[in-house]
Length: 153
Image (cartoon, rainbow, N blue to C red; front, side, top):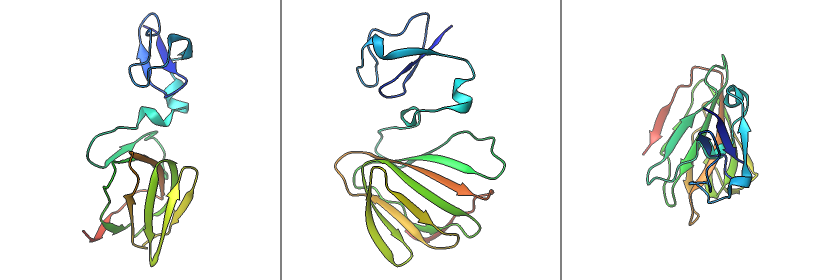
């Protein structure tokens, strides 16, 4: 069985041929290319971990790192995380899509596609989707293990 990846959204299709159109984004078959079996172990399009449900979703990937913990966060419109901190872990956020209000310590700001936010160890932080569409961001935490302490709901 062959694997095909949509170059528009990252959707992976299994079959002898690519689909006539991508079931995720509607791209035509020409936008698909065949990928090798080990492809996902070294490369991943963020859309493979993006979801569009009604609750916050945290999707880990590339789980075999000894010290890094990478995640794709899916944040529906109007949803926010509780104020929390990681007592033994630093965190970097990279906004892939959407408009997110971040609180880090006593600072508050709006981040959009391409923005990077630093979350230092033991500093309380939270994030809220203030846009009309789902927001997606990459979070990389280190070192492992990642401890979570809820400061305020």
